[in-house]
Structure formats: structure tokens, C-alpha cells
Image (cartoon, rainbow, N blue to C red; front, side, top):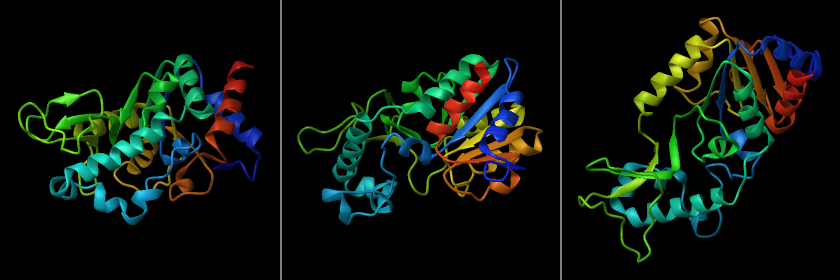
Length: 252
């Protein structure tokens, strides 16, 4: 393993850049650290009214059934925060890499839509998207997050409650999205984990799957993670600083 601290960030980046060609199949796995660089608060960050609630008390199906207005209001608060942030240099660098290689995918655990706003086209959302919603009964999907203006629950035309299209505590990941993520992990040449701790499964298992399938693994994170030991190269720092340097090497 080449570490940015032991061999120098420049040599580690050069090792990664040499493997990334126009014929490459590149997959990124992104977590909360990428969004944090844009100013998106972590899931457990809270302020004002929401300080008295734990995420587990709001981000679960039973809480939604018990008090849909409360849960919908919390997600409205979170959505308003995300609407006011912008993709960072790391997001844009990934979109730039997508335009330079043959095959590409971002597998993200984030729900903020920032990869799409930065220009990434192949984005697999393992935890959903905070800007979408769907009916829990008829499953009709809405491309916007629906909010109440009168303090009443949001109801579908079929009479069912409308919930955010995100994965809550105790829920399985969307099977189609995860199967597609596994497919990319098995087939890619380069698998780059960015801003994720590597402790949340099954997403954390994608790195091992890529490794066992022959991919070259890289990690970018502000601190070592549970998966650092299986990486071929690691970078300790922010993706918004490291990935633009990688772009410069690719273009030199």
C-alpha cells in the first residue's frame, strides 16, 4: 500500500493517475465527508427545534406513521439546508473524470443530489434522494419532495401517506440500486472510496468486492478508516483538494 503520509501525496497521486486512462473503468464510492466539504451538516447535526430529537426518532417508518407531519417537517428543514449549498471541487472533479474515461459510476451514500448538480451522469443512490418522495401505498413516485403548507400530512391521490424517498433506520437498501453498485464494483479497474468511514454495511463491502475482482483501490479521507488496510493507495485529506490535483496530473 502506498500512503500519502509515507511516500508523499505527489507520488501516490502519480501512481493513481498513471492507472487512469481513457480506457479505464472508474468507480467512486462516496460518503458524508464529500458533502461535508460543501457545508452539508452531518446526519446527527441539529439546531433550534430539532436539538431535542435524535435522528433515530425521526428517520424511521414507525415514527412517520405515528407523526407524519413531524417527520415531513424535519425533512423539509433538511431539504432547505441542502438547497442552499453548492457542489464542491471534489464533486466537480469526479464529473470531470467521468468525461475522461471509458466507463464511470458514482455510488453514493449521500442523499443531497450534489453529484448530479456537479454534472455526474451515472450516479447510483444507495440511500435515496432527499428531493424525491413516494406514496407508501400505491408507490407513485414524485420527483420533488412534497411538503405540507397547512400542518396536515401529505396525502397521495390514492389516500396513502407520502414519504421522503430516503432509506430510514431498519430499512433495506433499494435492491436494484445495490445490485447495480455490485456490478460496477466487480467490473471496474479503479475503485476510489471518498469521504466514507467504511463501517456502514452493506455499502462498505463494495470495496472488498472490487478488490477481490481485481480492481486497484484508492481511498481519500480526512483520517484512516476501517478499510484503509485493503487499499492500494491512500490519501489523507479533503477530496476537494486532492481530486483537483489528480485532474491536473491527468491533463499534464
